[in-house]
Image (cartoon, rainbow, N blue to C red; front, side):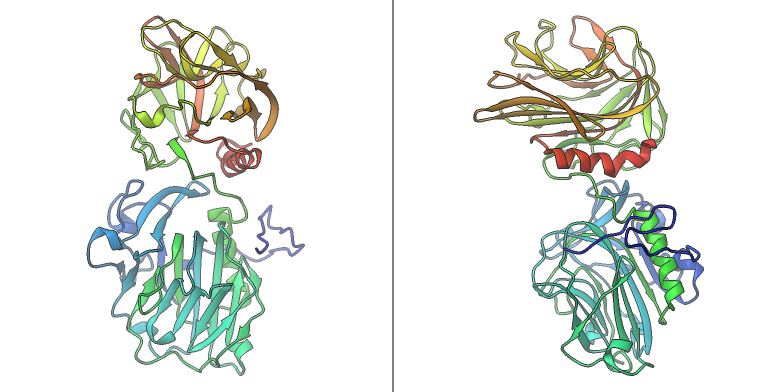
Length: 484
């Protein structure tokens, strides 16, 4: 594992201070190619992409018009995924056969200098898997089975950096006008220079025969990258230290490098009003970006990014019933970012209930009655309430409830802003499985309704019990949206 550094007013936990200008890649001359994914729009992909949509073309934003493409069926193309890091989307490669390429790309032939930036988040890697590379060993950033390694002008070197699953900035600088391997090839991760062990010498130029620029695979198509890529930038010269710092700082700020992403595994529902893939900004449909397709239909809701406002009278989101929303005897986690604006009455923030049944026939819910709490039931009239929390008005809070029903451990744990505030033991064997819709902002089962008065932001459901560390990870990944 290697250290990452979080930018806080221009300073780093390493003690090093960044004092130069922060520049976007286009503000520095000789920017030849720039592939960026975070807006998922027509400029980046040729059209607006939804979560899990196939990436056929990754557009070159530099103006050089050398786009990354992939011929063949959709199975060999990556997909766009929303909310990968800092609530921005990235291109996901499956590590099996996904890749993109530019061919021909004569610019990379006979280069005496170049600078390559890649912003990426690795998953499970196989030896040889490359983030990006050219053919004929012009350049490459790849996993050698132990560490990240690099190639420039036929010279290959290994670093001591072991891949992890966080987002990082990888920077490769080649200057064939210099003397010696260490001077010709330099590798940085998150603005930190890495020591290299060379296994072959670096030439003065890249090959004159180079034709391909690959993303997501090695040059002969035998090893593929698994993970997300957010940016690829290639310059036709070796940037100086000040320029390197400024571009890397731009990416640190843009992607919140050093801040963990949210927990992606075992999601069954994920709404994020700040992301266009989840909500376009107009209409009554909110899209589930967990990949499960649990679309919600909104009524009488006001939208202000990054949240929806519920009026306490008739506002709600209605999510059609589906087996994936049924917890049964398994573990479960509910997370909602809420901003309470009215203290009166009994209100429901999220709820799944037995239609037409008794008010106690709840499956799972988050409620407010002056305090906020969760209520879970088995459908027989037996239910359990979580530890309650006095929710302050006009303040954003992350509220998380973790239901555990595993062997002898049966608990309902409450977290506020990533911190545990209490645990309640229970004896229920399962939660109600009921063919009923899930509602956000209301309790609406045919008996009577309890509407929420306030704002709801990011909402997540998991069919697993998140750990305390994972709850905190989600808090840290999302808090900047709500100024926490």
